[in-house]
Image (cartoon, rainbow, N blue to C red; front, side):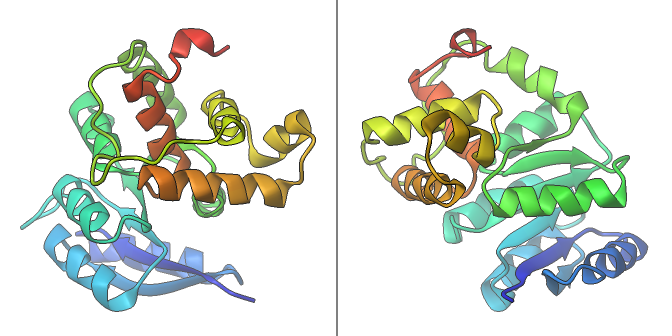
Length: 222
């Protein structure tokens, strides 16, 4: 069985140790490295080739925000999942706009973190409940495009746009598949194509891209 390759980034060794022990207890997870600051994290991504980076925000040398920006510039397919003790607006929105696949607070349980990692790997949205309303309010109206501008996005097909709009409603892959009468595997394939076309690495980035470009607004969604 192929394992999800994970890099842990946190400036507290005891936090990394506890998180590593938790994740390594899962048969489908492999912790391929650890970093104590953002600068080291950027280097480690190039060396260890993780699929998901669990990223703290406030760290020495280089913050998690700057590290996320650099990782997404160099390795756009790598998903960055923020795990931090801070729910400050400037952290949340700067990280999401930098390309983070999700934003979690450290008050979540171990089981919630495990589920979140699997969700991010499958292209599912991951936001802490305390963060959801902040995001909804912030992106109530579309603004200038910023997400995914590393290269001009390719146009989405009618079906891909349909999938993206349903994803923006917070539906899981299975729910989208049921609505469109397709298989879950087909929905995953559509999402991967959408990510490639928009040059993003996660569902969260893709949805924010759509909001920024005015393809839909939150007023269009339930």
